[in-house]
Image: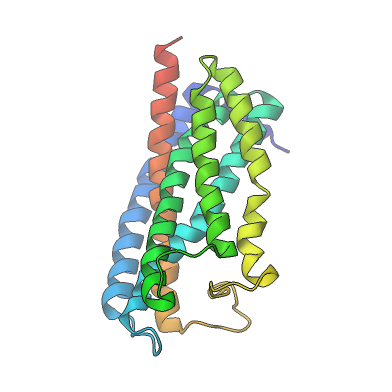
Length: 235
């Protein structure tokens, strides 16, 4: 079933794949972020309750959603490394980690900026916010643990185990607004059966998310290429 993946265990094939995918991710990032941000920040209608302050949603929501998706991708890469002992999987995991950490920081920062006018405070130990902060520390922990070993194979194994253990935090983040009484609002774009955001606001948000996916892909491909080159130089 996964035979198509096996060639990418070789650094040469993984590097070539990065070169192939990089232009597509880059174009998606540029077009998606330009269209999504300009549409959302300049042309989408104001919210009837929050006014123009809601526009931070076009940065906050993509970074928050994709910080979780990126963590899952990192954990999957770690799992592949543990099961098949692929160095390229461990390198992919570490290429993803700093990008995910930055995304999580952006989500926390923009959430605080949004929370101040809405809640009257920059921070509260709300279930969603606390779980998101834990996600940030998990990313940093994976990076720190990987850097603590001179043997990069052992480093990859240790960091992968930590990444896999941390996956339990993802459903906690997602369902925290349902499991606990929190200040954080519930789902918006995932409630297509009962829309809670107007289409004129939703479409630029979806385009922004697509652009952010492109940006993540671009940064991860660049990081992975650097990881491969660094590993080859130290052979």
